[in-house]
Image (tube, rainbow, N blue to C red; front, side):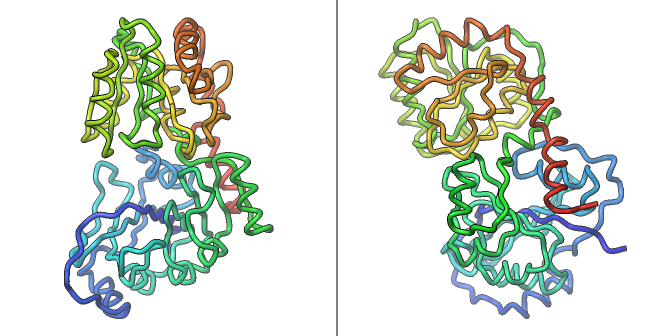
Length: 380
């Protein structure tokens, strides 16, 4: 029996460019068929063993398998150079990963390697393309797939019109993004259901009932758009006894942020980069009283509901462009940048009276979102 397959293409890149000549699509197809480039797509038979866990890339395809929409799921990424790794599973054995050689560095990314794989094994039943996207040639090769796009960041589209016109559904993070999509493609279907916060996993983030060491935590890349400066300026207006934690997975501003905190004399601990495992992030959130989201031009960050599943309410920048729908009277509060210190003080005073985890489980955890997605796909 033929498997039903979902593929999520991330815009993540690894490897490094070399001088090797690029094989033809037919040569890549032969490599895939022969097994030299990795195993073919295969059906997972033990659906009951699947746990919807991990990061925002993993949770949607795992949810699709758990719900029985598909029985094969893969994440595809891009590789600079001639030696991409073979198929691997990391810590999620039910979710296969493949890296495909890129034709060049320009986005949306072209890949003769990816086209060879599609020619060898056929397109997936459901194709999800995130971020900077793939070339129109790949979209045309998957014309029989149900295709979904999500920018992930604040722009509604990060792909040109020759690529975006091929999608059947665009997932957005806010209503204004849906309106931008329809201004480009009036008949295109959209749904406000950002993959990070709305495919939340109660297994990955959960309550541990640990002593509260920190007053607040900010889990965010050390990059400018995450606006750590708003947090630091707010902390400088509050008692120095207030203790904060910043957790970095990656980012180029680590040294600048540490220096800024030192100059202000605020009480901030730092973890990473490199990032720590999900269970450690969960533990650190459980040791904090509230979580904060300071950015403006951000695409409904997954951390919004991840904080909440760990049992802590969230203070978000009231100017956040995507994701404010998750801040309710029972999950947290919003504050403008100039008033962020007052927002921190107010939320800390009533943090113990809110019920963020219960609200997420009732509204935005993955079982709710996958039911909505199933209806749009038309899956039985």
